[in-house]
Image (cartoon, rainbow, N blue to C red; front, side, top):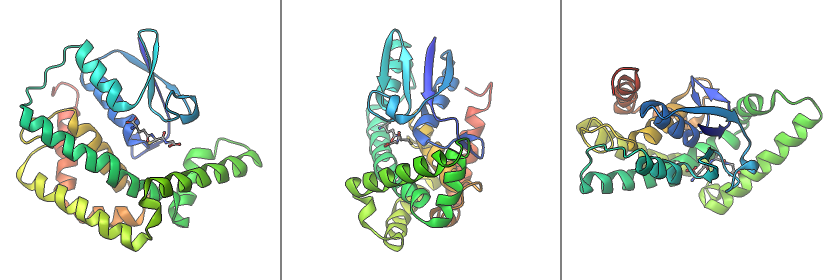
Length: 232
Ligand SMILES: N[C@@H](CCC(=O)N[C@@H](CS)C(=O)NCC(=O)O)C(=O)O
Protein backbone atom coordinates (compact mmCIF):
# COMPACT_ATOMS: atom_id res chain seq x y z
CA UNK A 1 0.00 0.00 0.00
CA UNK A 2 1.17 3.52 -0.75
CA UNK A 3 2.42 5.42 2.30
CA UNK A 4 1.93 9.18 2.18
CA UNK A 5 4.50 11.03 4.26
CA UNK A 6 3.44 14.48 5.24
CA UNK A 7 2.87 16.95 8.05
CA UNK A 8 -0.16 16.25 10.21
CA UNK A 9 -0.83 19.91 10.96
CA UNK A 10 -4.19 21.04 9.63
CA UNK A 11 -5.97 24.37 9.39
CA UNK A 12 -9.76 24.31 9.08
CA UNK A 13 -9.70 20.57 8.41
CA UNK A 14 -7.23 20.66 5.52
CA UNK A 15 -3.52 19.85 5.55
CA UNK A 16 -1.54 23.02 6.31
CA UNK A 17 0.67 22.23 3.29
CA UNK A 18 -1.35 22.65 0.08
CA UNK A 19 1.03 20.23 -1.68
CA UNK A 20 0.31 17.53 0.91
CA UNK A 21 -3.40 18.33 0.75
CA UNK A 22 -3.37 18.05 -3.07
CA UNK A 23 -1.91 14.54 -2.95
CA UNK A 24 -4.11 13.36 -0.09
CA UNK A 25 -7.23 14.63 -1.90
CA UNK A 26 -6.07 12.97 -5.12
CA UNK A 27 -5.58 9.58 -3.45
CA UNK A 28 -8.93 9.83 -1.70
CA UNK A 29 -10.86 11.01 -4.76
CA UNK A 30 -9.46 8.33 -7.06
CA UNK A 31 -9.80 5.65 -4.35
CA UNK A 32 -6.13 4.68 -4.33
CA UNK A 33 -5.44 2.81 -1.07
CA UNK A 34 -2.99 4.69 1.15
CA UNK A 35 -2.03 5.36 4.70
CA UNK A 36 -0.55 8.51 6.16
CA UNK A 37 2.62 8.72 8.22
CA UNK A 38 3.98 11.88 9.80
CA UNK A 39 7.24 13.10 8.25
CA UNK A 40 9.47 16.14 8.13
CA UNK A 41 10.74 17.72 4.89
CA UNK A 42 14.34 16.75 5.73
CA UNK A 43 13.41 13.05 5.40
CA UNK A 44 12.13 13.37 1.83
CA UNK A 45 14.20 12.76 -1.31
CA UNK A 46 13.92 16.46 -2.25
CA UNK A 47 13.97 17.66 1.37
CA UNK A 48 10.32 18.60 0.97
CA UNK A 49 6.96 17.14 1.86
CA UNK A 50 4.93 15.33 0.65
CA UNK A 51 6.77 12.22 -0.41
CA UNK A 52 5.59 8.63 -0.71
CA UNK A 53 6.71 5.04 -0.31
CA UNK A 54 5.31 3.32 -3.37
CA UNK A 55 6.14 -0.01 -4.99
CA UNK A 56 9.43 -0.24 -3.10
CA UNK A 57 10.54 3.30 -4.04
CA UNK A 58 10.66 6.62 -2.20
CA UNK A 59 9.22 9.26 -4.51
CA UNK A 60 9.19 13.01 -3.96
CA UNK A 61 7.26 15.96 -5.46
CA UNK A 62 3.47 15.98 -5.44
CA UNK A 63 3.25 16.51 -9.20
CA UNK A 64 5.67 13.74 -10.19
CA UNK A 65 3.92 11.36 -7.80
CA UNK A 66 0.49 12.31 -9.12
CA UNK A 67 1.57 11.86 -12.77
CA UNK A 68 3.04 8.43 -11.94
CA UNK A 69 -0.26 7.40 -10.30
CA UNK A 70 -2.33 8.72 -13.23
CA UNK A 71 -0.24 6.46 -15.49
CA UNK A 72 -0.17 3.40 -13.22
CA UNK A 73 -3.89 3.54 -12.41
CA UNK A 74 -4.83 4.55 -15.99
CA UNK A 75 -6.84 7.52 -14.68
CA UNK A 76 -8.86 9.20 -17.43
CA UNK A 77 -10.25 12.65 -16.70
CA UNK A 78 -11.64 13.52 -20.12
CA UNK A 79 -9.48 16.66 -20.54
CA UNK A 80 -8.65 18.03 -23.99
CA UNK A 81 -5.07 19.11 -24.80
CA UNK A 82 -6.23 22.74 -24.54
CA UNK A 83 -7.72 22.14 -21.09
CA UNK A 84 -4.50 20.46 -19.98
CA UNK A 85 -2.42 23.44 -21.16
CA UNK A 86 -4.71 25.82 -19.29
CA UNK A 87 -4.46 23.64 -16.18
CA UNK A 88 -0.66 23.66 -16.35
CA UNK A 89 -0.57 27.47 -16.68
CA UNK A 90 -2.88 28.00 -13.68
CA UNK A 91 -0.92 25.44 -11.71
CA UNK A 92 2.36 27.29 -12.35
CA UNK A 93 0.85 30.56 -11.13
CA UNK A 94 -0.64 29.00 -8.02
CA UNK A 95 2.22 26.65 -7.05
CA UNK A 96 5.13 28.89 -7.98
CA UNK A 97 3.78 32.35 -7.13
CA UNK A 98 0.66 32.66 -4.98
CA UNK A 99 1.78 29.74 -2.78
CA UNK A 100 5.01 31.58 -1.92
CA UNK A 101 3.10 34.73 -1.04
CA UNK A 102 1.08 32.59 1.37
CA UNK A 103 4.30 31.18 2.84
CA UNK A 104 5.59 34.73 3.40
CA UNK A 105 2.31 35.75 5.03
CA UNK A 106 2.58 32.84 7.45
CA UNK A 107 6.25 32.96 8.38
CA UNK A 108 7.14 36.65 8.31
CA UNK A 109 4.49 38.91 9.96
CA UNK A 110 4.78 38.47 13.76
CA UNK A 111 1.06 37.88 14.33
CA UNK A 112 0.71 34.99 11.84
CA UNK A 113 4.09 33.55 12.88
CA UNK A 114 2.84 33.16 16.49
CA UNK A 115 -0.07 31.00 15.26
CA UNK A 116 2.13 29.00 12.89
CA UNK A 117 4.78 28.46 15.54
CA UNK A 118 2.17 27.13 17.93
CA UNK A 119 0.63 24.81 15.29
CA UNK A 120 3.93 23.32 14.13
CA UNK A 121 6.14 23.28 17.20
CA UNK A 122 3.91 23.15 20.30
CA UNK A 123 4.46 19.41 20.73
CA UNK A 124 8.17 20.07 21.40
CA UNK A 125 9.37 20.90 24.88
CA UNK A 126 11.31 24.05 25.70
CA UNK A 127 14.10 24.95 25.12
CA UNK A 128 14.06 22.67 22.02
CA UNK A 129 10.84 24.27 20.80
CA UNK A 130 12.34 27.77 20.72
CA UNK A 131 15.54 26.57 19.02
CA UNK A 132 13.82 24.50 16.30
CA UNK A 133 11.19 27.17 15.68
CA UNK A 134 13.85 29.89 15.30
CA UNK A 135 15.93 27.74 12.92
CA UNK A 136 12.89 26.80 10.84
CA UNK A 137 11.81 30.43 10.53
CA UNK A 138 15.33 31.43 9.51
CA UNK A 139 15.33 28.70 6.82
CA UNK A 140 11.88 29.74 5.58
CA UNK A 141 13.05 33.36 5.22
CA UNK A 142 16.20 32.20 3.41
CA UNK A 143 14.10 30.10 1.00
CA UNK A 144 11.74 33.02 0.44
CA UNK A 145 14.66 35.28 -0.41
CA UNK A 146 16.16 32.69 -2.78
CA UNK A 147 12.79 32.20 -4.47
CA UNK A 148 12.46 35.97 -4.94
CA UNK A 149 9.23 36.60 -3.04
CA UNK A 150 11.23 37.36 0.13
CA UNK A 151 12.73 40.44 -1.53
CA UNK A 152 9.42 42.35 -1.41
CA UNK A 153 7.70 44.00 1.52
CA UNK A 154 4.23 42.95 2.60
CA UNK A 155 2.50 45.84 0.86
CA UNK A 156 4.16 44.99 -2.48
CA UNK A 157 3.32 41.32 -2.06
CA UNK A 158 -0.33 42.03 -1.42
CA UNK A 159 -0.39 44.06 -4.62
CA UNK A 160 1.07 41.08 -6.52
CA UNK A 161 -1.29 38.65 -4.79
CA UNK A 162 -4.26 40.79 -5.73
CA UNK A 163 -3.43 40.33 -9.41
CA UNK A 164 -3.36 36.53 -9.04
CA UNK A 165 -6.55 36.44 -6.98
CA UNK A 166 -8.36 38.77 -9.39
CA UNK A 167 -7.28 36.66 -12.39
CA UNK A 168 -8.50 33.47 -10.74
CA UNK A 169 -11.71 35.13 -9.58
CA UNK A 170 -12.47 36.30 -13.15
CA UNK A 171 -11.73 32.83 -14.53
CA UNK A 172 -13.94 31.12 -11.97
CA UNK A 173 -16.82 33.50 -12.52
CA UNK A 174 -17.16 32.02 -16.03
CA UNK A 175 -15.81 28.52 -15.43
CA UNK A 176 -16.91 26.06 -12.79
CA UNK A 177 -13.40 24.66 -12.44
CA UNK A 178 -9.76 25.34 -13.41
CA UNK A 179 -10.14 23.49 -16.73
CA UNK A 180 -13.61 24.82 -17.56
CA UNK A 181 -16.61 22.66 -16.76
CA UNK A 182 -14.58 19.52 -16.01
CA UNK A 183 -13.48 18.89 -12.43
CA UNK A 184 -9.93 17.52 -12.54
CA UNK A 185 -6.74 17.03 -10.53
CA UNK A 186 -5.82 20.63 -11.42
CA UNK A 187 -8.52 21.74 -8.98
CA UNK A 188 -6.94 19.99 -6.03
CA UNK A 189 -4.01 22.35 -5.45
CA UNK A 190 -6.12 25.41 -6.34
CA UNK A 191 -8.72 24.37 -3.78
CA UNK A 192 -6.15 23.43 -1.12
CA UNK A 193 -4.35 26.75 -1.55
CA UNK A 194 -7.48 28.92 -1.45
CA UNK A 195 -8.80 27.02 1.57
CA UNK A 196 -5.48 27.42 3.37
CA UNK A 197 -5.26 31.12 2.54
CA UNK A 198 -8.85 31.75 3.63
CA UNK A 199 -8.50 29.70 6.82
CA UNK A 200 -9.84 31.38 9.94
CA UNK A 201 -7.39 29.42 12.05
CA UNK A 202 -4.41 31.29 10.62
CA UNK A 203 -5.57 34.71 9.66
CA UNK A 204 -2.94 36.56 7.63
CA UNK A 205 -3.01 39.86 5.69
CA UNK A 206 -3.39 37.69 2.56
CA UNK A 207 -6.47 35.97 4.06
CA UNK A 208 -8.17 39.33 4.54
CA UNK A 209 -7.52 40.20 0.90
CA UNK A 210 -8.50 36.81 -0.52
CA UNK A 211 -11.84 36.63 1.31
CA UNK A 212 -12.99 39.67 -0.67
CA UNK A 213 -13.04 37.55 -3.86
CA UNK A 214 -16.45 35.98 -3.70
CA UNK A 215 -16.03 33.65 -6.70
CA UNK A 216 -13.19 31.97 -4.84
CA UNK A 217 -15.49 31.15 -1.90
CA UNK A 218 -18.11 29.77 -4.31
CA UNK A 219 -15.41 27.73 -6.07
CA UNK A 220 -14.35 26.27 -2.72
CA UNK A 221 -17.94 25.08 -2.20
CA UNK A 222 -18.15 23.62 -5.74
CA UNK A 223 -14.96 21.63 -5.21
CA UNK A 224 -16.18 20.44 -1.80
CA UNK A 225 -19.37 19.16 -3.45
CA UNK A 226 -17.22 17.18 -5.93
CA UNK A 227 -15.03 15.78 -3.18
CA UNK A 228 -17.95 14.69 -1.03
CA UNK A 229 -18.14 10.87 -0.95
CA UNK A 230 -20.30 9.43 -3.71
CA UNK A 231 -19.96 12.46 -6.02
CA UNK A 232 -17.13 11.30 -8.27
N1 LIG B 1 7.20 20.96 -5.74
C1 LIG B 1 6.99 20.34 -4.45
C2 LIG B 1 6.81 21.44 -3.41
C3 LIG B 1 6.59 20.88 -2.00
C4 LIG B 1 6.83 21.92 -0.93
O1 LIG B 1 7.22 23.06 -1.20
N2 LIG B 1 6.58 21.52 0.31
C5 LIG B 1 6.81 22.40 1.43
C6 LIG B 1 5.67 22.28 2.42
S1 LIG B 1 4.21 23.04 1.76
C7 LIG B 1 8.10 21.99 2.15
O2 LIG B 1 8.39 20.83 2.30
N3 LIG B 1 8.88 22.97 2.60
C8 LIG B 1 10.04 22.75 3.39
C9 LIG B 1 11.24 23.41 2.85
O3 LIG B 1 11.21 23.97 1.73
O4 LIG B 1 12.27 23.37 3.53
C10 LIG B 1 5.78 19.41 -4.52
O5 LIG B 1 4.95 19.58 -5.44
O6 LIG B 1 5.70 18.47 -3.72
